[in-house]
Length: 160
Picture: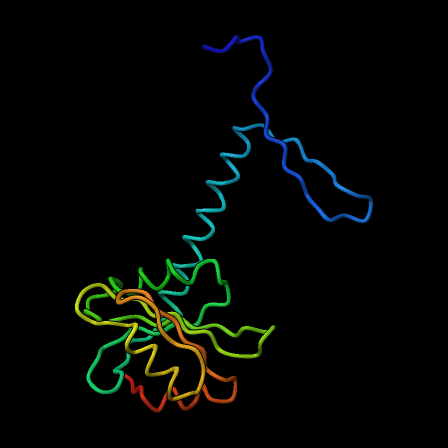
């Protein structure tokens, strides 16, 4: 048991590189926990916003039902993809989230599934069609699409 008169435990967070070298920010552990909880709540709000305003239900060639959404925050892609699988009343075979990679100037697509749809096969096929990378695991995969080819992806999709 800790001594109640002792100061609370602290965590040192280093920020670097800085123009003046390494600087340290002293944060109490309870503050760090509070900050973490607020960040999780902010992520949950953003995922909910995308689900309700940006995700669409589509048919994907040849006969899949898919939920599709764009997401600029790469840290949310995986969780959003999983949440799209169970969002709404319509069961979907898989989900696709996509974002623009400004460094490489391509679209990055993340595919998620639960069950019988092997998204690694779908991502691999898309990679072949677009002459880019594509593949992964049966329930989690990704592919890249050239920036000027996103419209071609949509030729495989039609609204539900």
